[in-house]
Every structure is written in structure tokens, then in C-alpha cells.
Length: 84
Image 1 (spheres, rainbow, N blue to C red):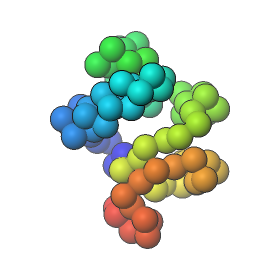
Image 2: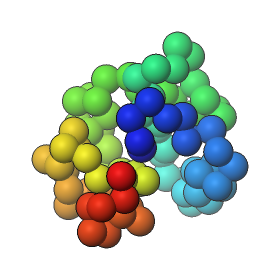
Image 3: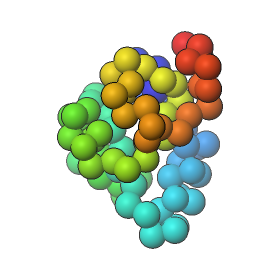
Image 4: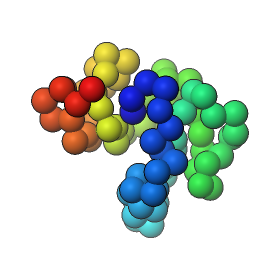
């Protein structure tokens, strides 16, 4: 997500999370600025390294240097890396 944003609260991403969860796939949310342990009945992880270690697939709005080391596991609409 864009640095400083809270797009995970937007209804469109919630719909994606619901559909993935409905397939019995564990969904976790990475959000370092949220002080809660859960959001939308999903575990919230604040540590990026922990999140990357446990995630098989990451749905991201934008590519960033912080997640470039797991690029093969990222699904994004930012196909050209230019959606900043």
C-alpha cells in the first residue's frame, strides 16, 4: 500500500479478503500503524519481516522496495511498478 495509507479499510479490499477467506485460505493483514491484533476478524501483523516469512502470496496495491525480495509472491495491479 501507499506509505501512510490505510487502504485495507476500504470496501474493495475487504471483498477480496472475504473471497479468499471463503476458500479456507488463511488471510493476515500487514499494518504497522494499527494498534489492534485483529481487523475484520483477521490477524494483524505489524512486523514486515514476520509478515513476509509467513505469507505465501501477498496482495499489494503497489510494488515497493520493502517487498522487492518477495516479488515472485506478489499479486498487484501495479504491473509496471509505476503506480506511485
